[in-house]
Image (cartoon, rainbow, N blue to C red; front, side):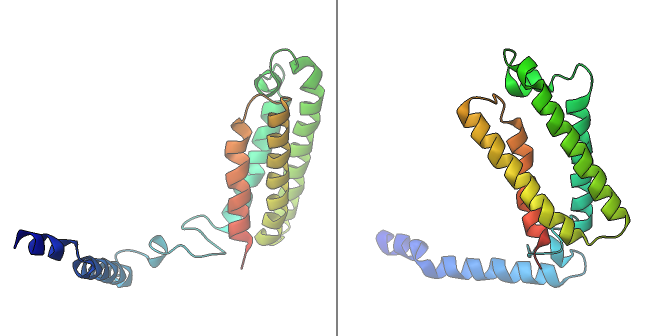
Length: 168
């Protein structure tokens, strides 16, 4: 009798009923006006909760300006942080070029954003920009030229979010 009772609790029928009741509860919650449906459903293209393509472009532009400022600042610790203390003097000029490029890209995107270029067009470029820089950074990390993987923590999600928000 005890094994029959145990088998009844382990059978998939009660689990199936529990799953259906949870799905029904979520559907009724989504239908209510108290919780917006966007919080419960992850959909592709145009927004991810409060993150819209326009906001993502603004974030990417500010991030590019911030990276440029951090690299180009006098007495910046960026070369030593990314390249190590021994090679920081040799690689400072390379990072300076990267900082200048980030500033120019941010300025270009800010100009185009001001002149109302569609956000998805910006995001299509940011997919390439963040993705390519992440791949180069990863290659340099594996070859030992770069010692810090901090940039990958920002570059990879920015490329993936840009790709997600750019699609229709």
